[in-house]
Image (cartoon, rainbow, N blue to C red; front, side):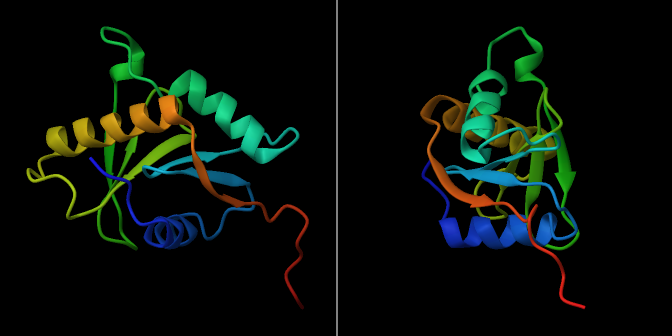
Length: 132
């Protein structure tokens, strides 16, 4: 499993979270942490969340996942035990595109992001105002 192109990931998450004013942090393998209750520096807060909710632990809720089909982009979002930790799986990534295969693939990507913790992009629009 290799890292997905950062520009593709940024584009997907910017479209998926276009209406959100919440800060979000993107990690190398496609996991995005949305900060619904931002407190301090986004990178630090997201890293702590992913460190806790990213790694998979056999036999625990950390192994659970749900697969969401995207309407505005190709591919899927895989969720885990924390609703604000989401992982993008591109349409060309898993060979088997069944929900279970996509979910397991996304869970593996989230685990990698949760153990490597390499931030590739931060989006924080809290201070910006839309021009009138």
